[in-house]
Image (cartoon, rainbow, N blue to C red; front, side):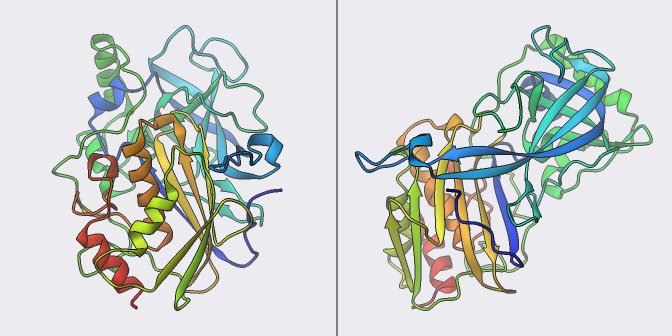
Length: 382
C-alpha cells in the first residue's frame, strides 16, 4: 500500500536540505563529472520508491512489507550544445557516448503527486521545455526511478539549484535566489561561452573529485531568504504548524536503526522549555508524519520534508525522506533526523550553528540548543 495519500484540495510544501548551499565555479567544476550547455526538449514525471524498513526485529521490510513511499521526480531530456567536461564512460539517454547534439536525462526533485498536484522545492523550480542552461552534473547512482529503464544516461544536478545556470539569448542569467548568487557572480549577463571556457580550463587542470559530501560550516553563510516570520531566537518559521492543543502528533518510523528518529522526537518534547508537544512514535500503521529512508544516490540532498496544509495556517500531514547515500554514522543520522523533525514542526533554516536547524546541521552538535527549545516553545506554548 502507498504511504499516506495527499488529500485533494490541500496545499503542499517541499523543503530540501541541500548538501551544497552555494559555491564557486571552480568548486562546482571539481565536483561535477559532466558539464554541458543544453536545451530542455521534453520532461516527464517519475517516482523513486522507498520501501518500508524497520527497527523492530521480525517486522517485514522492503518489498515484502508491501509499504512504500514514492518520491516524485521530474526527468528532463536535454539536447547537448557544448561540453566543458565529460568522460568516455558517460552515456547518453540512448546508450551512446556523450557528444554534441546527443541527449542526456537529468533528474530533478519534485513532480506529480498522487492527488494530481505538482510539487517542487521552494528554491528549485521544475525544468521547463525550451529552457536553456549550463548544467553541472553527476551520475546519481542509488535507487533508479520506477519508469526509467537504466541509470545510464541519467544524471543529477550538483547542488540542486546551485548547479544550473539559466541561459537566455546566449547570456547567463542572474541566480534565482540570493542564497545561490555567489556561483553566478562575475558571469551574470555575460556570454555563455565565457563560463564554458572558464569551466573547461579548470576541468583540464583539476581532475573530478567525486560527488559532493556534507561539508564544514561556512562562517559567512547568510540567513534564510524564506519565510519572513521568525521565532524570538531568530529561526525563520513556515506559515503552517500543527493546530491541535495539546499538540498530539503521531510518527510512523519506517527507517532502519541508522536513523534514531525516536531520540530526535524526545529532544523536541523534553527540554528546559515547556511546550505542548506530545510526539508519539510507532513502528507501523498510518500516522500524521511518515518517515522513510532510501539510497537516493548523489542527488545533492541528504534529507527532505514535505507537508500538506489543510488551511491557511494548519498542517494536516507530513512525510520525511532520509537519503542513506550520505550516511556517515550515528552523529550524522541523529542530527539529520532531528533536523527534519524540526521542519515538520514548522521551523525553517537558521543562519548559524546556534540551532539544529542550521543549513548544514551535520557541522554542528547532534542535539537541539537553547535557541531551538525557545523556538518550539513559542510555536507550541504549553
